[in-house]
Image 1 (cartoon, rainbow, N blue to C red):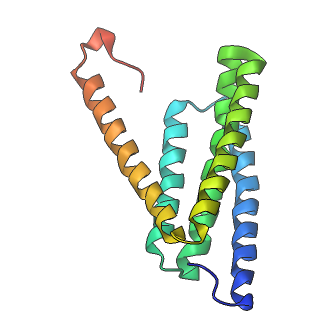
Image 2: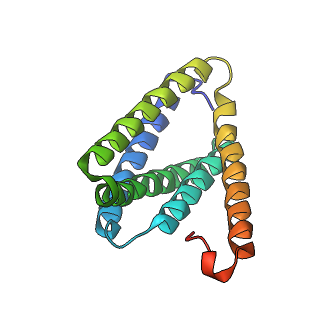
Length: 159
């Protein structure tokens, strides 16, 4: 999926713009839902974002798949942040929310480092890491659901 000529790099700029504009819209939606949504919706948004990144792995560079996947990824990822931040402020105050933002920025930096390390040799493997993460998340949620359904009715976990 690496650009092969100078003209191919225009798609990267468009893709970044699509991701950013969708992220702004997602952030507005997440801000609106912040006090109304719970962890279930954050999980749904994570699954949506990971599905979009997995679609990138399967896209073979097709613009008809790449740009919508980038839009969905950006919107879902950024919609989750205000929901999580609102919950953290309610649970732990401003410091917890500040720590969350710091960790998100650290994860972005780590992602840039990993992406840069793979860019020359194995960039096509990066979306498959998301596919693996998606499978791991699905297995974890399934196990959690099964464990909660086996618990006595008076001790069921909030999922």
